[in-house]
Length: 314
Image 1 (tube, rainbow, N blue to C red):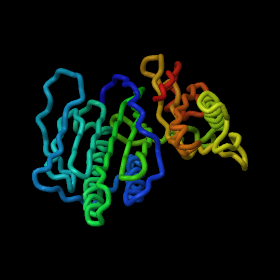
Image 2 (cartoon, rainbow, N blue to C red; image 1 turned 135 degrees about the vertical axis):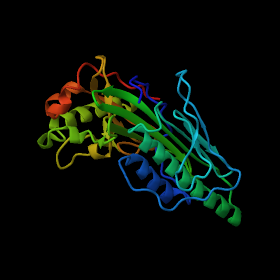
Image 3 (cartoon, rainbow, N blue to C red; image 1 turned 120 degrees about the vertical axis):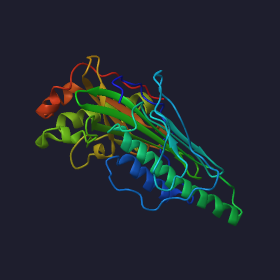
């Protein structure tokens, strides 16, 4: 992967409750997107129609010659080609699909699983979108083209760890689209995925200091956006039996730092509906590394320092 820290991808449309035949399908596939450490291969591939092709275009800015295209062996996506650094795109009457990843070799230990996952999702969505379109035609319902967008961007790198943020947006024929944000922390040399919680000393995960920082950060953002420190009209409670701050429903990614080669803190992502209505949108919180520095395991403590920039909301 590139050592260069990249900017945050554009925020996709917020999560919404979907009506129609695509609800269960979309929810299941979004779970696959979030669980990027899954090693299970798909065994129910989608068949492709003759003449439909997936095109892959370079998104890198480097001028070095690219590796010649190689045919993907992903089950159920015949005709897919992939360059070393590319963006996957596909479109037919039932589905439009795109997936973008940071520049990197096809064998990159971190990027390869994310690329494979995107292709697997394409196969699933292609099959199910075609079935949905056929059913709509059969019953005389309004035809709708499904949409799926995936984007991963590198946020920061320190030592042997890299942090990425992923956004996905899907529309499967409901009232409006559904957006999700995920974090991905991995070892550069092996691709092993880590959770932020696993980087903390077991007895301090999650630490009270981190929980309070997330809670107070959310209160601040709520006051700025809706002028009320509430979750569904109830006052935000940080801890205890009546706590309504769902830290387990948040996604986490390590933030860059103003110090080279360091992580400056933690980004905490709440999708719509997790801590507020659809209309409120998503929340992104920036937690300084000083908040949890003493709770980190020794092998990770040395990777943190400096100050993390705040990610802009879109």
